[in-house]
Image 1 (cartoon, rainbow, N blue to C red):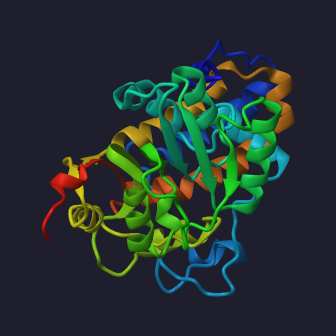
Image 2: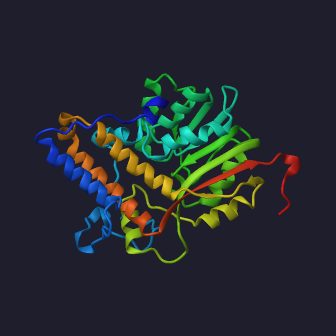
Image 3: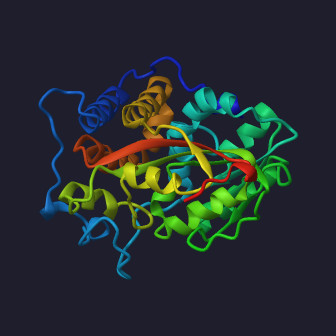
Amino acid sequence: MAGSILNMGGSIKSPGKVRALLGKLFDMIGQFLHLKKGQKKSVSKDHRSAREKPKADDETTDDDFQPAALWPPERLNIIEKLWGEGCTSPGSADFLRVMLPLLGLSEKKSLLMLGAGLGGLGRAMVDETGVWVTGLEADEELAALGKDMTRMAGMQKRAPVTLSNLEQPKLKENSFNAVVSLESLYRVAAKEQLYTAMVAALRGEGELMMTDFVKADDEPASDIMKAWAGREPTPPHLWTADAIQSFLQTMNLDVRPYENITAQYRAGVFKGFFNYLSGVTKSELLEISGDLINECEYWAKQLTAIDSGGLKVYRFHAFKLPDKHKKTI
Protein backbone atom coordinates (compact mmCIF):
# COMPACT_ATOMS: atom_id res chain seq x y z
CA MET A 1 0.00 0.00 0.00
CA ALA A 2 2.82 2.41 0.75
CA GLY A 3 4.07 1.86 -2.76
CA SER A 4 0.65 2.72 -4.18
CA ILE A 5 0.79 6.06 -2.37
CA LEU A 6 4.36 6.86 -3.31
CA ASN A 7 4.37 5.72 -6.94
CA MET A 8 1.95 7.32 -9.35
CA GLY A 9 3.01 7.91 -12.94
CA GLY A 10 3.26 6.54 -16.48
CA SER A 11 3.31 7.59 -20.11
CA ILE A 12 0.93 9.98 -21.83
CA LYS A 13 -1.77 8.25 -23.82
CA SER A 14 -3.83 10.98 -25.47
CA PRO A 15 -4.41 10.19 -29.15
CA GLY A 16 -7.35 11.22 -31.31
CA LYS A 17 -10.45 12.81 -29.90
CA VAL A 18 -9.23 12.69 -26.30
CA ARG A 19 -6.43 15.18 -27.10
CA ALA A 20 -8.69 18.23 -26.90
CA LEU A 21 -10.12 17.14 -23.54
CA LEU A 22 -6.68 16.40 -22.15
CA GLY A 23 -5.47 19.80 -23.35
CA LYS A 24 -8.41 21.47 -21.64
CA LEU A 25 -7.62 19.73 -18.37
CA PHE A 26 -3.93 20.66 -18.52
CA ASP A 27 -4.85 24.25 -19.32
CA MET A 28 -7.34 24.39 -16.45
CA ILE A 29 -4.91 22.95 -13.92
CA GLY A 30 -2.20 25.23 -15.23
CA GLN A 31 -4.37 28.25 -14.51
CA PHE A 32 -5.21 26.93 -11.04
CA LEU A 33 -1.54 26.54 -10.24
CA HIS A 34 -0.64 29.91 -11.80
CA LEU A 35 1.82 28.29 -14.19
CA LYS A 36 1.18 30.94 -16.83
CA LYS A 37 2.72 34.29 -16.08
CA GLY A 38 0.33 37.06 -15.27
CA GLN A 39 -2.70 34.79 -14.86
CA LYS A 40 -4.63 35.08 -11.64
CA LYS A 41 -7.90 33.31 -11.12
CA SER A 42 -10.19 35.88 -9.55
CA VAL A 43 -13.20 35.14 -7.40
CA SER A 44 -16.40 36.54 -8.86
CA LYS A 45 -19.20 37.16 -6.41
CA ASP A 46 -21.75 37.02 -9.21
CA HIS A 47 -20.77 33.50 -10.24
CA ARG A 48 -20.55 31.81 -6.84
CA SER A 49 -23.01 29.02 -6.31
CA ALA A 50 -25.09 28.82 -3.15
CA ARG A 51 -22.68 26.18 -1.85
CA GLU A 52 -19.79 28.65 -2.21
CA LYS A 53 -21.53 31.58 -0.56
CA PRO A 54 -18.93 33.38 1.60
CA LYS A 55 -19.57 33.94 5.27
CA ALA A 56 -18.68 36.87 7.47
CA ASP A 57 -15.27 35.36 8.22
CA ASP A 58 -13.31 32.14 7.82
CA GLU A 59 -14.32 30.79 11.22
CA THR A 60 -18.10 30.87 10.91
CA THR A 61 -20.29 28.21 12.44
CA ASP A 62 -23.58 29.45 10.98
CA ASP A 63 -26.33 26.87 10.79
CA ASP A 64 -26.82 27.60 7.10
CA PHE A 65 -23.31 26.48 6.16
CA GLN A 66 -23.57 24.02 3.26
CA PRO A 67 -20.58 21.69 2.78
CA ALA A 68 -19.39 21.51 -0.81
CA ALA A 69 -17.04 18.57 -0.46
CA LEU A 70 -19.03 15.35 -0.14
CA TRP A 71 -17.67 11.86 -0.64
CA PRO A 72 -19.59 10.04 -3.39
CA PRO A 73 -17.84 7.06 -5.03
CA GLU A 74 -17.10 9.12 -8.13
CA ARG A 75 -15.17 11.69 -6.11
CA LEU A 76 -13.35 9.10 -4.03
CA ASN A 77 -12.26 7.42 -7.24
CA ILE A 78 -10.62 10.65 -8.40
CA ILE A 79 -9.12 11.45 -5.00
CA GLU A 80 -7.40 8.09 -4.64
CA LYS A 81 -5.97 8.40 -8.16
CA LEU A 82 -4.53 11.81 -7.23
CA TRP A 83 -3.24 11.21 -3.70
CA GLY A 84 -2.91 7.45 -3.31
CA GLU A 85 -4.95 4.51 -2.08
CA GLY A 86 -7.06 5.42 0.95
CA CYS A 87 -5.73 9.00 1.04
CA THR A 88 -7.70 12.23 0.73
CA SER A 89 -4.94 14.85 0.63
CA PRO A 90 -1.56 15.38 -1.07
CA GLY A 91 0.46 15.31 2.16
CA SER A 92 0.44 11.53 2.64
CA ALA A 93 3.14 10.55 0.14
CA ASP A 94 5.52 13.24 1.40
CA PHE A 95 4.95 12.17 5.00
CA LEU A 96 5.74 8.52 4.22
CA ARG A 97 8.84 9.40 2.26
CA VAL A 98 10.33 12.17 4.43
CA MET A 99 8.88 12.23 7.94
CA LEU A 100 7.91 8.64 8.77
CA PRO A 101 11.53 7.39 8.93
CA LEU A 102 12.27 10.08 11.53
CA LEU A 103 9.68 8.78 13.99
CA GLY A 104 11.53 5.55 14.78
CA LEU A 105 8.35 3.48 14.84
CA SER A 106 8.19 -0.29 15.22
CA GLU A 107 5.81 -3.12 16.07
CA LYS A 108 6.50 -2.35 19.74
CA LYS A 109 5.13 1.19 19.48
CA SER A 110 1.72 2.80 19.06
CA LEU A 111 0.62 5.88 17.15
CA LEU A 112 -2.47 8.07 17.29
CA MET A 113 -3.60 9.45 13.93
CA LEU A 114 -5.99 12.40 14.16
CA GLY A 115 -7.89 13.07 10.97
CA ALA A 116 -7.47 9.49 9.74
CA GLY A 117 -9.76 9.96 6.73
CA LEU A 118 -10.06 6.72 4.78
CA GLY A 119 -7.24 5.21 6.85
CA GLY A 120 -4.82 4.78 3.96
CA LEU A 121 -1.94 6.53 5.65
CA GLY A 122 -2.39 4.52 8.85
CA ARG A 123 -2.41 1.24 6.94
CA ALA A 124 0.70 2.33 5.01
CA MET A 125 2.48 3.10 8.29
CA VAL A 126 1.67 -0.40 9.54
CA ASP A 127 3.04 -1.87 6.32
CA GLU A 128 6.23 0.21 6.55
CA THR A 129 7.02 -0.05 10.27
CA GLY A 130 4.69 -2.53 11.99
CA VAL A 131 3.47 0.21 14.38
CA TRP A 132 0.04 -0.08 15.97
CA VAL A 133 -2.12 2.79 14.69
CA THR A 134 -5.30 4.21 16.21
CA GLY A 135 -7.08 6.39 13.66
CA LEU A 136 -9.71 8.94 14.66
CA GLU A 137 -11.84 10.74 12.08
CA ALA A 138 -14.43 13.48 12.72
CA ASP A 139 -16.25 13.16 9.38
CA GLU A 140 -18.94 10.52 9.81
CA GLU A 141 -18.96 9.41 6.17
CA LEU A 142 -15.17 9.20 5.89
CA ALA A 143 -14.93 7.33 9.20
CA ALA A 144 -17.46 4.73 8.03
CA LEU A 145 -15.67 4.27 4.70
CA GLY A 146 -12.29 4.09 6.43
CA LYS A 147 -13.57 1.47 8.84
CA ASP A 148 -14.83 -0.67 5.97
CA MET A 149 -11.60 -0.30 3.97
CA THR A 150 -9.51 -1.22 6.99
CA ARG A 151 -11.65 -4.28 7.66
CA MET A 152 -11.29 -5.40 4.03
CA ALA A 153 -7.54 -4.97 4.35
CA GLY A 154 -7.55 -7.19 7.45
CA MET A 155 -6.15 -4.38 9.62
CA GLN A 156 -9.10 -3.65 11.89
CA LYS A 157 -6.91 -4.43 14.90
CA ARG A 158 -3.64 -2.91 13.69
CA ALA A 159 -4.98 0.31 12.13
CA PRO A 160 -8.66 0.86 13.01
CA VAL A 161 -10.50 4.01 11.94
CA THR A 162 -13.07 5.26 14.45
CA LEU A 163 -15.52 8.15 14.39
CA SER A 164 -14.53 10.73 17.00
CA ASN A 165 -15.69 14.19 18.03
CA LEU A 166 -12.43 16.14 18.08
CA GLU A 167 -14.22 19.13 19.62
CA GLN A 168 -14.64 17.03 22.76
CA PRO A 169 -11.68 14.65 22.59
CA LYS A 170 -11.59 11.59 24.79
CA LEU A 171 -8.03 10.37 24.47
CA LYS A 172 -6.47 7.89 26.87
CA GLU A 173 -3.56 9.50 28.67
CA ASN A 174 0.01 8.20 28.38
CA SER A 175 -0.98 5.71 25.67
CA PHE A 176 0.93 6.57 22.49
CA ASN A 177 4.53 6.89 21.39
CA ALA A 178 3.55 9.32 18.67
CA VAL A 179 0.65 11.57 17.70
CA VAL A 180 0.35 12.57 14.04
CA SER A 181 -2.09 14.76 12.11
CA LEU A 182 -1.92 16.00 8.52
CA GLU A 183 -3.93 19.07 7.48
CA SER A 184 -6.99 18.10 9.54
CA LEU A 185 -7.18 20.04 12.80
CA TYR A 186 -7.82 23.45 11.21
CA ARG A 187 -11.50 22.48 11.26
CA VAL A 188 -11.53 22.13 15.06
CA ALA A 189 -12.80 25.16 17.00
CA ALA A 190 -11.74 24.00 20.50
CA LYS A 191 -8.05 23.86 19.68
CA GLU A 192 -6.75 24.44 23.20
CA GLN A 193 -8.75 21.49 24.48
CA LEU A 194 -7.65 19.23 21.63
CA TYR A 195 -3.96 20.15 21.77
CA THR A 196 -3.97 19.57 25.54
CA ALA A 197 -5.56 16.14 25.08
CA MET A 198 -3.05 15.25 22.35
CA VAL A 199 -0.11 16.01 24.60
CA ALA A 200 -1.68 14.14 27.51
CA ALA A 201 -2.14 11.09 25.26
CA LEU A 202 1.60 10.94 24.61
CA ARG A 203 3.88 8.78 26.72
CA GLY A 204 7.00 10.34 28.18
CA GLU A 205 9.42 11.31 25.39
CA GLY A 206 6.65 10.66 22.86
CA GLU A 207 6.64 12.64 19.64
CA LEU A 208 4.05 15.05 18.24
CA MET A 209 4.13 15.79 14.51
CA MET A 210 1.41 17.91 12.98
CA THR A 211 0.93 19.75 9.69
CA ASP A 212 -1.98 22.12 9.32
CA PHE A 213 -3.46 25.06 7.49
CA VAL A 214 -2.96 28.39 9.22
CA LYS A 215 -3.91 31.96 8.42
CA ALA A 216 -1.21 34.49 7.67
CA ASP A 217 -2.37 37.02 10.26
CA ASP A 218 -5.31 38.10 12.40
CA GLU A 219 -6.70 40.56 9.87
CA PRO A 220 -10.31 40.05 8.64
CA ALA A 221 -10.60 37.30 6.05
CA SER A 222 -10.34 38.35 2.40
CA ASP A 223 -12.95 37.44 -0.21
CA ILE A 224 -10.56 34.80 -1.54
CA MET A 225 -10.23 33.21 1.90
CA LYS A 226 -14.02 33.29 2.35
CA ALA A 227 -14.47 31.59 -1.02
CA TRP A 228 -12.07 28.83 0.05
CA ALA A 229 -13.82 28.43 3.41
CA GLY A 230 -17.17 28.16 1.61
CA ARG A 231 -15.96 25.09 -0.29
CA GLU A 232 -14.73 23.24 2.79
CA PRO A 233 -16.82 20.30 4.09
CA THR A 234 -16.87 21.89 7.56
CA PRO A 235 -16.12 25.51 8.50
CA PRO A 236 -12.42 26.25 9.05
CA HIS A 237 -11.26 27.66 12.38
CA LEU A 238 -7.82 29.01 11.59
CA TRP A 239 -5.09 30.12 13.97
CA THR A 240 -1.83 31.71 12.95
CA ALA A 241 1.30 29.57 13.05
CA ASP A 242 2.67 31.75 15.86
CA ALA A 243 -0.47 31.15 17.94
CA ILE A 244 -0.20 27.37 17.57
CA GLN A 245 3.53 27.37 18.33
CA SER A 246 3.04 29.62 21.37
CA PHE A 247 0.31 27.39 22.78
CA LEU A 248 2.41 24.25 22.36
CA GLN A 249 5.22 25.98 24.23
CA THR A 250 2.97 26.38 27.29
CA MET A 251 2.76 22.61 27.71
CA ASN A 252 5.16 19.93 28.87
CA LEU A 253 6.90 19.75 25.51
CA ASP A 254 10.27 20.28 23.94
CA VAL A 255 8.93 22.28 20.98
CA ARG A 256 11.12 22.40 17.89
CA PRO A 257 11.10 25.33 15.43
CA TYR A 258 8.06 25.27 13.21
CA GLU A 259 8.45 25.05 9.44
CA ASN A 260 6.57 26.78 6.63
CA ILE A 261 5.88 23.96 4.15
CA THR A 262 3.40 25.85 1.97
CA ALA A 263 5.58 25.56 -1.13
CA GLN A 264 6.05 21.82 -0.66
CA TYR A 265 2.33 21.32 -0.11
CA ARG A 266 1.45 23.34 -3.20
CA ALA A 267 3.96 21.35 -5.24
CA GLY A 268 2.33 18.16 -3.97
CA VAL A 269 -1.03 19.25 -5.35
CA PHE A 270 0.62 20.05 -8.67
CA LYS A 271 2.39 16.68 -8.73
CA GLY A 272 -0.75 14.70 -7.95
CA PHE A 273 -2.72 16.12 -10.85
CA PHE A 274 0.05 15.96 -13.41
CA ASN A 275 1.25 12.49 -12.43
CA TYR A 276 -2.26 11.20 -12.87
CA LEU A 277 -2.78 12.94 -16.21
CA SER A 278 0.57 11.65 -17.46
CA GLY A 279 -0.61 8.06 -17.13
CA VAL A 280 -4.34 8.28 -17.83
CA THR A 281 -5.75 6.21 -20.68
CA LYS A 282 -8.11 7.55 -23.31
CA SER A 283 -11.08 5.52 -22.13
CA GLU A 284 -10.55 6.37 -18.47
CA LEU A 285 -10.18 10.08 -19.17
CA LEU A 286 -13.41 10.14 -21.16
CA GLU A 287 -15.18 8.32 -18.35
CA ILE A 288 -14.05 10.51 -15.47
CA SER A 289 -13.41 13.87 -17.14
CA GLY A 290 -16.41 15.59 -15.52
CA ASP A 291 -15.49 14.38 -12.04
CA LEU A 292 -11.86 15.37 -12.60
CA ILE A 293 -12.84 18.88 -13.65
CA ASN A 294 -15.06 19.18 -10.56
CA GLU A 295 -12.11 18.14 -8.40
CA CYS A 296 -9.94 20.73 -10.14
CA GLU A 297 -12.47 23.38 -9.24
CA TYR A 298 -12.46 22.30 -5.59
CA TRP A 299 -8.67 22.49 -5.31
CA ALA A 300 -8.61 25.75 -7.25
CA LYS A 301 -10.22 27.55 -4.30
CA GLN A 302 -7.55 26.25 -1.94
CA LEU A 303 -4.66 27.02 -4.27
CA THR A 304 -5.98 30.50 -4.93
CA ALA A 305 -6.16 31.11 -1.17
CA ILE A 306 -2.58 29.86 -0.82
CA ASP A 307 -1.33 32.02 -3.68
CA SER A 308 -3.10 35.05 -2.22
CA GLY A 309 -0.82 34.74 0.81
CA GLY A 310 -3.74 34.36 3.21
CA LEU A 311 -3.55 30.58 3.65
CA LYS A 312 -0.37 28.75 4.59
CA VAL A 313 0.68 25.26 5.62
CA TYR A 314 3.04 24.71 8.58
CA ARG A 315 4.66 21.71 10.24
CA PHE A 316 4.81 21.57 14.04
CA HIS A 317 7.09 19.15 15.86
CA ALA A 318 7.57 18.50 19.57
CA PHE A 319 8.64 15.87 22.09
CA LYS A 320 6.91 15.26 25.41
CA LEU A 321 9.21 15.84 28.35
CA PRO A 322 9.51 13.19 31.07
CA ASP A 323 7.57 14.03 34.23
CA LYS A 324 10.73 14.89 36.12
CA HIS A 325 11.50 17.57 33.53
CA LYS A 326 8.09 19.20 33.53
CA LYS A 327 8.16 22.88 32.77
CA THR A 328 7.36 25.43 35.43
CA ILE A 329 4.98 27.97 33.90
